[in-house]
Length: 323
Length: 277
Image: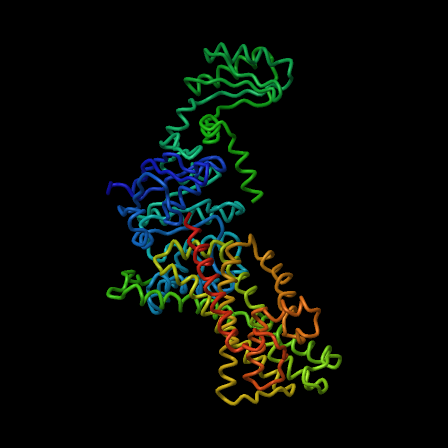
């Protein structure tokens, strides 16, 4: 099991009657970003909290950086970093004071805590704001400071629990850059997120969790392939044209197309992307059918999510944005 | 950019780190006050304001227990105000704890290789240090208003010791409540509970002037014991009263805090450990 940065086998965690984790398996390769996706209440956060030693579990086995989580949580804590759903930094202290305080609590002593704080402030682009109170930081700056605080001991494994929830696109980009830097430096990241785009951008492998179990584990590409390959998508200009569009698409793509009358949309899987697109476009033009939009679409992780869990990721996103 | 060595220092036991981490947690809160003097003004300003308001607004209308005018009432009132400030302190504890819990700061501490006890012990030590500052400022204000301790050095020190003991035992109540309430707003709402609890006592008036049943409740209120004991030690006018608990105020000013600690320390620790469930 030493070859894995994080390894969980049959993890179980019950809250009364509810099984938050119900035989959860996970294997994370060192030096990668591993995404953990799932609808709200699927067990993502519970899994992270169990692996980060914040919650005891009721059954199964878990190792982080080769150390047994149940048997030696104290040693695990010296090897991990955790960034939760809120920026867990002290609002009243300055960025530098925060990092020095956490450094002392990581047992670096005053002198090393100071020099480590300066290093991390520079690395996370916070040197200029170092001596300002965190109250005045933007959302992205807070999360970067939060990341810096969890990086004080250069942990082997970093748990990021929804690190960009509530951030604007700019703040999100800042956090993504910081995460990429960390992984380039050899850190392993276990990332939970409700933004599938985020997992697609950062993670080299994804585990989908639902009802406390891992229901899929693969690369984002392979997961998308599992849902199906490319699709052609045509939006008719008028509802009356829908049957003709559907007929053309069916002929070119050799398959029964899916017709969405509400959105005047026809889509079907294609084997050869370019041939299908040109064929359909030309035929429709020859027949004089007006088309509002035509294009090829790769399945997104949203499609994967919907297929695997039966929930649209949007539902989760909306709740996340409201929280 | 230099690279700091991140090796953990070797050869130091758990007891050392329990103390060192506790001190680091204390330092964090004290740094708050350094960075935000407004905070001090707020927290220390309230007791001063209370002393002035109760002393001068109500002072003239009150009949002090041993006779005399407003001056005599203020001599009676001051130890009561010290007690009230200590008693309200548990709300500050609860607010600080729930704020850290909600922001994930407590979880971050728990995910770090520091002594888990430091989160709780650090809070306790911080609160006692802040209480010392509060008492110093209150006593200074009281002195300016004409209050004196006639209890000699030892009596005065013992009285302040009893006040800090009361504050210390209420820290456990505060930590327990801080881990129980959902948010800082709810912690602030504890004033609604704390206020009557401090009023139904000998802090402001003699329990003997209240209806019998209420007077009995007031006499048995733990903070009445601390108020009576400190008045005795300071040599200030006491609230009198012939019941057993009023006659044994010095004893009860120690017994009550010990009982409160015995009840609430395990409750607070259990609540803290429940975070791991």
